[in-house]
Length: 498
Image (cartoon, rainbow, N blue to C red; front, side, top):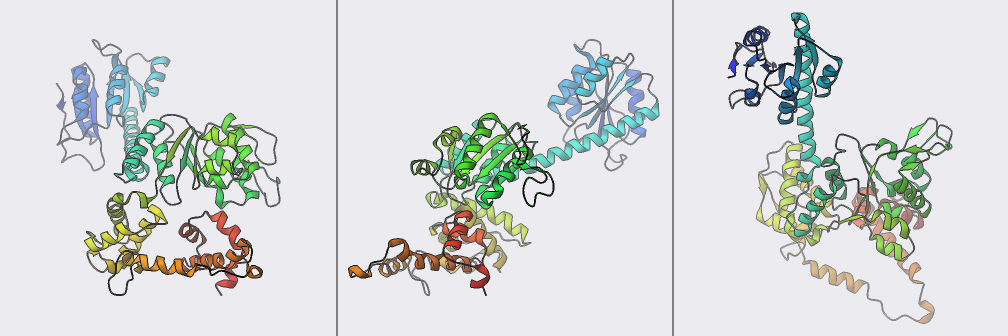
């Protein structure tokens, strides 16, 4: 039976992990236990290997063992000490073994290291060697525990736990993530900007065998066409003007991991052809070299426009669409799952109230009702921004309508200072009702729409303090489209903002 050998909790130095000694020789086991106790470890000695799982597990008052000293030769145990190590590490992955043996072989040493052993010592053991081996095992255990804690935080931040929603369509997305994550299958996600496509891609990565490798993201619409190929595939020094050194592309950075290509709908026909080849063959040539590079990358693609429509209009290659449309995840806009707004709002409240250093307990009913009525052109991202703003402005323990923008509170209300949304819509409709015009006064439609479109884009840019990324979200277009429209309409931020 396992028994403590000296070194109770009150006598153990801070930071020491618990040690487990497994040896069928009671004299050797007790001697090792006493040595570890003098070194400050909490020790459990086991002379019956069948008791080792319970001994490693610990009790409510005693933490699980962090390191163990295991004799290689354990008569009566099939596989000996190595089998005990294998079994214990399956239950306790952070348990680090030190192996003792009276007759060492290269094969057994290699197998012990493969099973996670920090050291492999032959009897009789020199105290200084054992002390160093224990310190090495303790450091390795601490690193494994820190890595597990970090992985838990990553799962909480980027796993399925971070995707909030009870809507049946969101439940279906959770099921698809679970099903596709263990595979290498290409995933295509569609949905408006701000619905959380990037978060879903990260959840797929976190639940996949690639979770310990890199997750790399590239928004294709934010990169000029002339630089997109270099960003994806890399370049060599001198490949083009400004290429002063070699640069790895996103495909190479994501080797062994996952690559998210967002706004894939904005890629040019030429770039679509290059992507088709690399998706089929998992190989490419960096810009400026004929050398072929092979990679093992799981590719997830996202589009804020229906690709089927772009294919029908000849704006997206049909063969590429069929290649990437293996598993499709359609993320619904927030306005179509209003029942998720309260849960999402509370999720963002917990995150942002802590970030701004305030204790905000909740959202009052009137404010929550206003949030549920709102249309959310910016989707989940906009709701997160609204809650962050409310946390910054809040002067009470709960969020109220005073902490929300006027357009949020006024939608659907007829209270003082707010007109119903329907009246605004009617006024807007009346403003655009055209009177019959003389034939010589009729202008081409694109010319007639130029000035209204310019005013709308300018209004969005000014409302977002000339932050073009946020303005594009408000307008429901990607950044590349906004840049093109600004150039076509002669909108120069330096001039307009002056």
